[in-house]
Every structure is written in structure tokens, then in C-alpha cells.
Image (cartoon, rainbow, N blue to C red):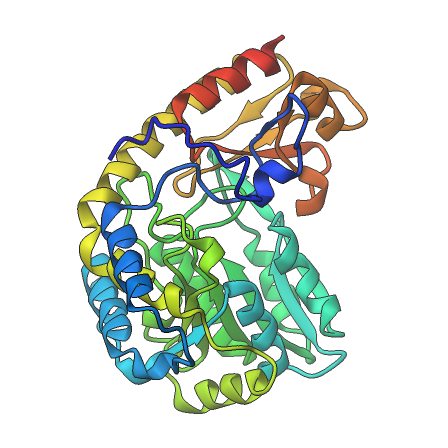
Length: 374
């Protein structure tokens, strides 16, 4: 578990590195890590490759993979789920787009929180729905939902769905029990369904417990929860995630909306997910410890740079940086001219900010700080 390695990705066509190919700009943008997969995942995939056959595999038949999800949910969140609740999807982005199709009609309102990552912000308009943006507020040094705005938009007669990201991307906050209670209450009173993107839920860096949306008593029959091993175990390129939908009619509506459009998940993704959720507990804990040290280093050093401010994220491997103090017109250009390539804040709805990925060797972070400080 040597997370300080810097494996070359230049011959792998990795999206993160292709963007700045043939430049001296250090890629720190898209949300995948620079960590090699856990050996158990590589061993499981190697065994599957050596089988030599890659024909059609119905995900529902991959019962060991489903059992792995059941085991993980019990271990991580003390949440006992049933196998029928699991719906495999080839990514959380297709999943929340399917949810929009399943639970609303063209012209209906879909609430999204901001700032948020670009595919989620784009989803309502892609599906011909009205995007209703609920901002985040700085409460005692922690970002949380603007519940007054959520109440306002949820009360509109044509609002059908609220898509939330928990832990929040890019600000890194984890919803508390009282906050999830408020979300549940608002959704229940106004008959708004909740789609909760929880892809970063196993990357909590503080002493907190993640609360899956559909494990909540008031939300069990009014929500779908989207999860994956992809971010935590760096297997995003395998195109495998899952929705947990306890309510049978909601599950049927979701499956109907996906029918004929959304493909089955990748067979190698099923193998990798099973291994990740059953054989990689120590690797997972080692990564969290390394990420926490990376986070603390990066927050400390970013806050030393004039014009930049960052709050400590409770989760994820992403740091949201407020660059409004720089007084520059284009924060992305400022970073790239320094030799660092973050995710542009404008894509998240905040042009005066940018997002840094600290899921990498400490050496890369030190290099980035030298560049940004120059």
C-alpha cells in the first residue's frame, strides 16, 4: 500500500493527463486518483482475464457481486439492504439522468445543489426539465445546504425531484443526521423524490458516519441512492456503479426508464467491485490515512498563498479553493499559467473558484504548491 508512487499514465490515454499532454501543466482536475488499484482487485481481474471468455453477462446473475454490496453496506453504514434493491448502472451520471426521466416529465422542476460537478448541473436541461438551483451556505466554517431555498423550490407545484450530492462535490461536506432529517421532511411534505449521488461516501476523512439517503425512515420509499466502488478504489474506467432502490414501484419506474438505452455494466467492473467490497478493507483504510495527510497539507499550504482560501473538506479527495482574493478575471488561466491544471470553478457554477484533486502522491502536491506560490 505505497500511495506515494507516481505511476506513469502517459501511455494509457488517461483523460486527466491527455488534457495537458505535451505541456508542463500538472493535471489536478478530474476526480480519479493516481493510486494503483489494490492487489486483490488486480488479482481478481487477472483471474477473470485468464478465463478467456467475455460473453454476455447479466449483472443480476452476478450474485457474488451483489452479496459484496450487501456486505459493504452493512459494514460501512450498518445498513441492511436486500438483493432486489440493487440496480446495476454503468455510472452514476447515467443513473441520475435516468432518474430524471423516471420521476418527472418535460417542463417539470428538478432541484440541484450548487456548486456541483458539471454533469449533475447539466442533467435537468439535457432532459428538458427546469433546473432549480439551491446554493450552499458557509455556517461556522462548513458548507451546507441553503434549506430556505430548498423549501422554496420544493414547494413549487411542478417540482418533482431533488438531486443531491452527499458527500458534496466539490465542497466536501457530509450531511449530518439533522440535515438529512430536514431534507427528508421537505421532500415528504412536498412530494418531491430524492436522488442521492453518494459516489464519494467511502472517502470520509473525519470521524463521521455516512448516512445513505435510502436508509432514512422517511426516505426509504421516496428515494434512490447511487453508489459505486469507482472513486474509492480507482476503477472509474470500468463503468460500473449501482442504485439502491428499496421501494418496488420506484425501482420499476427506474428500470423502465433505462430499458433499451442504458447498457449492462462491464463484466470486469462486476469482478472489480466484488473484490473491492470484500478483500480490500486494509487498503481502503490505508488510503484514507494517506488522503487525510494530503488534505491537511494542501489546505495549510493553499491558505498561505495570498488571494487563495480553502476550508477543510470532511470527505472526498477534492479541495475547493476560493480564488476571489486574487482579483484576476480568469482563475483557471491564472492556475494554468502557473503550471497547475485544476477543475475550472466556472464549470461548477463558481467562476472565482477552482477544484484541486489531492488523490495523488504527496510529491505532486508539493510540486503544485511550488508552482502556485511562484
